[in-house]
Length: 122
Image (cartoon, rainbow, N blue to C red; front, side, top):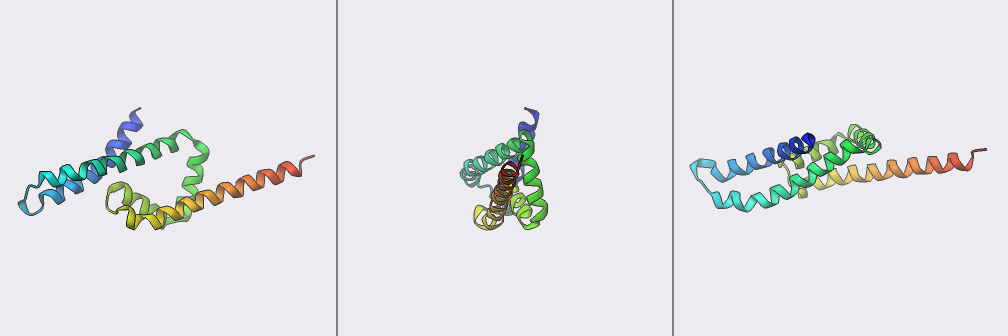
């Protein structure tokens, strides 16, 4: 449970700090802008926190993700920018989508290899 708390709160803190700065920039205090941004920020951060927890629980998935991120640094950058709130989905989607496609391809290749090994087993 400690990982969940740290993950979700950590992601939320980056994005909420940015929203708070935006709402109070130049001495203005636009609490309504921050209040409007909060539900969107919380939804994204909770989802990303759940994803990190899933990776913590599933070793095989975690290995595939780490390999994909290692091989596609632009996807890693997009994921971090999305997680911290620096980028929205519009800007991060191409990199995150490439990561997803890479993950699907690695899973398909692994499944095909396993099927081939079973077919050639004595």
